[in-house]
Image (cartoon, rainbow, N blue to C red; front, top):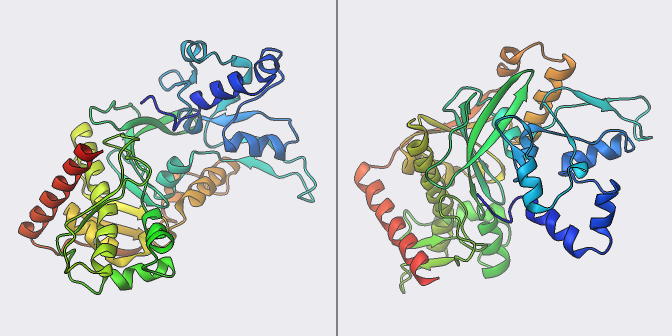
Amino acid sequence: MIDAYFSATKIRWILNNVPGAREKARRGELRFGTVDSWLVWNLTRGGVHVTDVSNASRTMLFNIHNLTWDEELLELFGIPASMMPAVQSSSEVYGMTKTTLFAHEVPIAGIAGDQQAALFGQMCTAPGSVKNTYGTGCFLLMNTGEKPIFSRNNLLTTVAWKIGETVNYAIEGSIFVGGSVVQWLRDGLGIIKSSSEIEALAGQVSDNGGVYFVPALTGMGAPYWDPYAKGCIYGITRGTSAAHIARAALEGIAFQTMDIVGAMAADSGVRLPELKVDGGASRNNLLMQFQADILGAQVIRPEVTETTALGACYLAGLAVGFWKDLDEVKRQWKAEKVFSPKTSAETVAALKEGWADAIRRTVITH
């Protein structure tokens, strides 16, 4: 997907607009890297310029088949190859720290993109396994095994990780506004004083009262990819309360997730048996129960919900031999709570119909 979400257009803008940038790049005096590259560069005092396959695959400059920087794309965007970091696996020792932060040299091991790390932290290592991270945005990834699947439904194909010589791929759907809709209810509308109050407020009503909230506050991500869409609240009447709007906001997160799960099922031919969840908003029991209801599948929350950091930790631990193999790592993962569907099929069908109508109205009105 060609989008400013990725790195390529940003690099080109810098080269074209920052005085002297292109000249420095031509002389080999300018480097590009995602945040992992910057951290390793600083921790090794400029000794190592590296990234891993998962971060490289999110730049719009990487060939995910042969796992090298793509010469055609670099030429298309006018980006010198000398700027790019070396691309290595997601689980190996890249170098040693050279800073005064530590008394001894410490091996730097384990690099993965944000959502790929969360996928690994959730131990979604089998093809067809899916996780959703409920953060400021929401990010669903499905492990598709050792072969990439190209989406017909506006999802992204990405490298999940490389361990040894084995490469896993994933398809991803990005929701731009997830937990940030709760922040907007707090800061924009002022109907709650803190984000933690949202569950209690939404729980004051038994349903959404016919209110649907499409939280396209910064455009819409997958499967719509419409950067110009605006957020909309539909179905407001004189009977609508702050609780209905709060509930509709939470349900909007779950509905967006449902749309991406449907797109993933269509692309992969795999019906979702369960959804592993993590991130801050996954602690909201009302949201998680509604998610299970609307998907008709179990939603599983682990004991450790900060799975991005956990995934990077697992990859590093494998690299330095802290864990001997993937089976030993899998034993670390434990479920904290399982949410099973409770709502009737008739109610779910009506809710889905209401959401589909709200999406149609959003697309038409913007």
